[in-house]
Image (cartoon, rainbow, N blue to C red; front, side):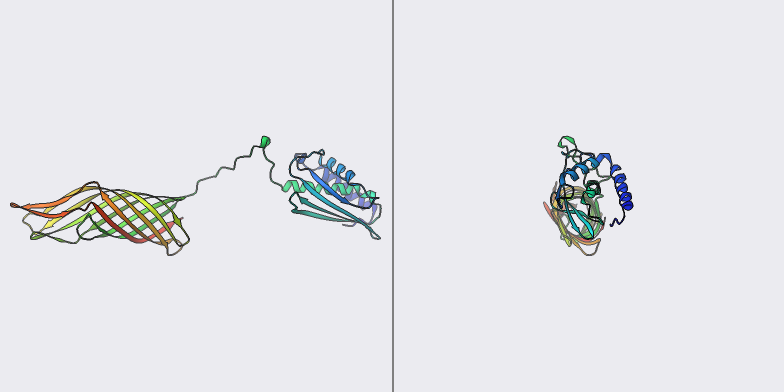
Length: 320
């Protein structure tokens, strides 16, 4: 800015005074500052400008908090007085710069406007600085989250193949729902498996297995393309058998409790669509045998294996 006439200088000086006096009192005793000053001998000294700036800031010489540094340089030439003020923090980061030109050569007259500019620069830097630490070095606690993150929910439908509980290979389907909390995966699954007819004496028998299970696991691998979740399962179901080709139709139903361990793998196909593969190994709490008597003849139909292997392959949809 240029100040060509005394009246203009007085008006700007008065404006600086008003602005300085309106600095918030809460900024008093905030960050201390240091002034490095390069000026001709006839100009105000560094000490006088710092003292006046501190008076305007309403602080003493022992301000608290991080230090601010003002670098001032004054040059005299035939056109007047040029002054440059640059503000940095204690790490050397540039916080702003002011350039002022006075069209006279009376350097002692720049003391008041220079002190006002310094005070305004310090005040502005403090207003942008983070809030000072709480008394006694107590760090304020972080703000509480307004609400917890919503779990990631997925629903999948799968084809199932198994061996162990039903004769030969059991074929069926499963419907699974999971919720993921960070890396913890919880879920529920319902499934059914059935066998084709097998020979039973002169007749034939078929088997069906229906179950419902609770799943729990930890997601150990996750990338943009796939994820892997080892799982533990607790399941309960009903194994039923029916035989035909005899004078009396044979039927039997047995409850079955199962514990299992498996791995759920997901391969991303689209933004929310993924392929799911879930192999598991199941151990039943009891061994079941199915047989029927025709006259004096005992006909063995099927006995469950102590361990069942199963794999489910399907597609799922993730709700985020």
